Image (cartoon, rainbow, N blue to C red; front, side, top):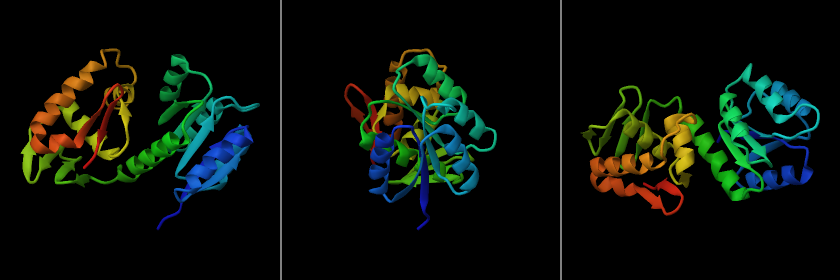
Length: 223
């Protein structure tokens, strides 16, 4: 089994320990950096990092500066942690190529779920075909079939199903789905997701039941 190595950069030792303890329980090796400069040093030294978690507010070189530096050389997944809930910061994060944006305080279990979802997604990026529970997604051909039967999906329906399958087992909020499927600059009504899910379920027949509704939040795909 390949070793999964994650870097956490946060000037709070308590926060680093909290994240490290939970990720270690999930067989993930965690490297720690107490500031941005140290995070960059570890990034340059370690060639097999799978993901980086950056706190925005660090003395000296902050999380945004570290993110910019890393993005010059790598597309490694990055999760930003912040104590502020500011839409401008969130948009800046996505512009810099941040994969996730989590506001403190947060549930460690949620962080672990986000980390695992990103790692699964990264692992599957090079796979041309996704297959689960009789549902087959051919990324190259942009075709979905269920038990050998091809489905006639729109572009957004295809991308929505692909996103669900890639993140199977993870509770996804409507805002998160909009950010990842419609892109963060979509300013329409989040209810457009419900409309697409309804159509997607209908086209999937019995397999449409794999898309579970989480009332008041969003959806979860369970094969």
